[in-house]
Length: 108
Image (cartoon, rainbow, N blue to C red; front, side):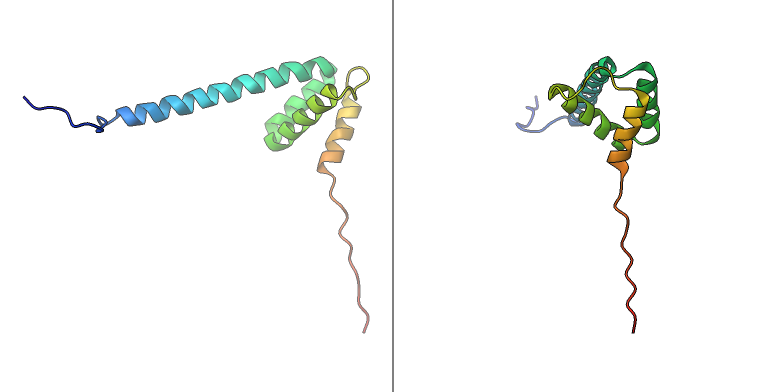
């Protein structure tokens, strides 16, 4: 009769734990995303929400920044009524605005 060695994990078991951790982490991320989306939906008009979902498809990082900004505005009571599509475009413009590069010419 052979005794199992202490501290030795059978092959495949460690990989299963890693996989379970990854799946659990992804599920938590999806739940948080769904909660944020439902919160933001309350503050957006249908056209603005549709535009937000289009931004999500085309540029997820910008979508995430915009989502966080809207939630922060709602928590800080800086919203009067629902956000229209024009207001959302204004927020997008502010988030994506880049300063104009200044070109200087030096004369000899």
